[in-house]
Structure formats: C-alpha cells, structure tokens
Image 1 (cartoon, rainbow, N blue to C red):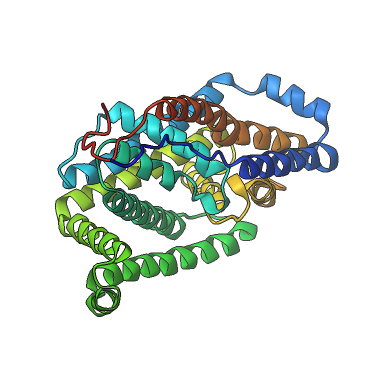
Image 2 (tube, one colour):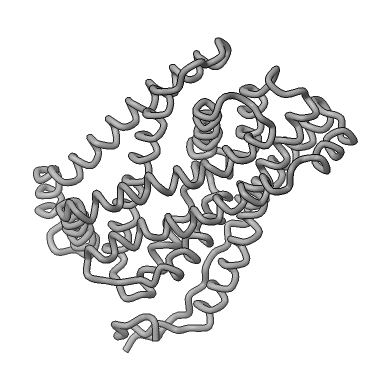
Length: 339
C-alpha cells in the first residue's frame, strides 16, 4: 500500500499581492488625480443604500446560479451535487478567479472538489473545461445580443459598442470551432494514442476526451448548461446595472449594455481581477456622463460590490474548505472521497 499523502493547497499569494497592490494603486489614482476624496465620501453618504445592497444581492445570487452550471454537467456523468455545495464551491473558486490572471484560477479548485466527490481528475477536468466553454460562449452571446440591439448610443460610445459587437461575434466563432475540434479530432488523438501507447498521460487524455464527447453528446444537458451560464451572466451583470441605476445614467437598455461592457474587461485582463483595467474602462466610458466626484463614487461602489466583498467572502469559504481538506487524508484505494 502506498503511503497516503495529505492535501496541501497552494494559496496564490503572489496573485493576491499583485491584485491588491494594483487595485489600491488604481483607487489612489482615482482619488488623487480624478476626484476629490472629501466629495467622494459625501457622495457615498448620499447614495441610495438600497441600490448598493440590491447590486450585492445580484452578485452573490450569481454564485448560486453558476453552481448549477457545473451541477448540470456532473449529472450528465451520473453524479449529483447538492446545489448549496456547488454554490459555496463556486464562491471559493470566484475568489481564486479574482486573484489570478485572465480570471482562470478557479477551475483547478473545482476539479479538486469534484475529485473529492469521487470523480476522476480527467472527468473533473472535462466537466470544468466543458462548463468553461459553455460560460464563455454564453458571455459572447449575451454581449453580441446586447451590443447589436442597443439604440440611441452616444457617439463617443458607439465606436466601443461596434468593436465589442465584432469581437463577440469572432469570439463565438472561435469557441464553436474549438468545441467542434475537441469532438471531431479523431486523427490527432489517434496519433497520440499510437505514439504514447498505454502510458498514463495517454489514458488520462483518452478518458478526458471520452467525457467531453459524452457531455457534448448529451444535448439536453449541455443546452441546459448553456442556458444556466447565460442566466448567470444576466444575473451577475444586473449588479452593475443596479449600481448605475442609482446614478440615473443612460436609458435602461444602454445601461445594461454598459454593465456588460464593464463585466467583460476583467475576464480578458492579464492583471488579476482586472485591477486597474476595470477602473480605467469605467472612467473611459462614464467620463463626461458623470461629474468626476460622482464617477469616483461609482468606481468605489462598483469595485466594492464586484471585487472586494466577493474576495472577502470567497476567501473565507476557501480557507474553511482548505482546512477541512488538509485534515482529511485520501487513501489510494478509497472510492468515496467524501467519507
């Protein structure tokens, strides 16, 4: 019998440090160069508190919705996860997503969580990748719909809307091509298996591809996954929409399109959490629409709702999960990793 090893999760301290340093620097720039701190604080006191808590509700409710995206795919492979456990796991994964470049750090945590639930790592990885592709395709679809249907756009925003619409269309095409490639790439995988034989990496890749094909072949489950992912982004971007509503900017449809624009920035930013990039885009879009002090107030409120509070809550959930897992040894012959 092999000697069992305890799980030791590596906390991304470097990403956390970079995230907070860049984010604090961005806020310093907002207060120092763009807005009067005293007036921003006054605006914060006058801002309708109901909009703040309403926005926070949508951001946190999105965790519950997003948990069902992974839940749909685990059911497709014959495994069930309680909705509240998937919601908490997605909350912890969201913390890692916010402190890693290109918002890509939460996937590994979900894979390990599924492994703890008794799934093979290849199966868990396939579920996370299939779910991630569904999420990105839903995001691109929502962006394309919003940027194609919005009207009465101010001239200074029209060029950004047009560029984002084209980008969403191209990105959707790339994702669809990638899905087709994964399913149809018989020649490549056949060459890999002939070359590597029965090696462990080749078997892992074969199990991974078999699971991906199963997930994409289960049309009903995957369409449901796409629908849930679409709902997740609709709910999540509603947080920014509610915050903007407190300032009364733009008409409702354009306001939501702007909220989607703000939400897209961190996903494609190499800086963890989109720190600095997000604040810059908010300033670029709303400069001239809101007075500098009011705009500074929005940036503080917005980043608090979509960044600081989720990091605080998500890191707490992550710490509890990590301590629980560290105290539990998984024996090599165990099939049920939850006992």
